[in-house]
Length: 121
Image (cartoon, rainbow, N blue to C red; front, side, top):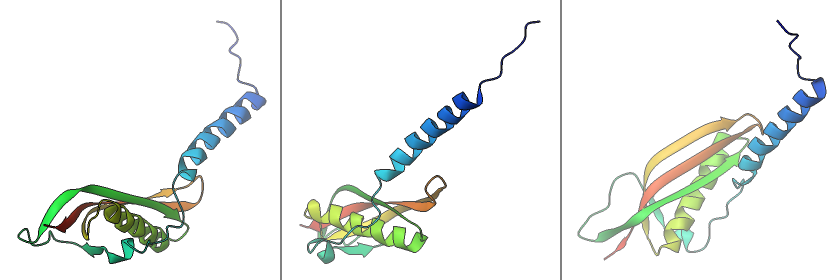
């Protein structure tokens, strides 16, 4: 049997640093603060589908954000969801799913909220 060489410490450090940079780079694309636009303020969040005689479904929307505190991340993601609905000329958004996870590499909670946007007929 031949002697198996262990990777040098420098190689391991470079690999770990590069891996961390890639992971952190992905999280940097997630906004931390999302300001609710003036038209986004007009969008109502609901948990049930609105009256189909009055509203028409216009598609799926989503919002994502990250923050140290999970409630801050949730509020920012909800703002993004309302802004996305307003961008589609919607007036109501039904929240369909909320997904939260901890991004250990940056010490923050990432929240993704998806929903269905509606507008009046």
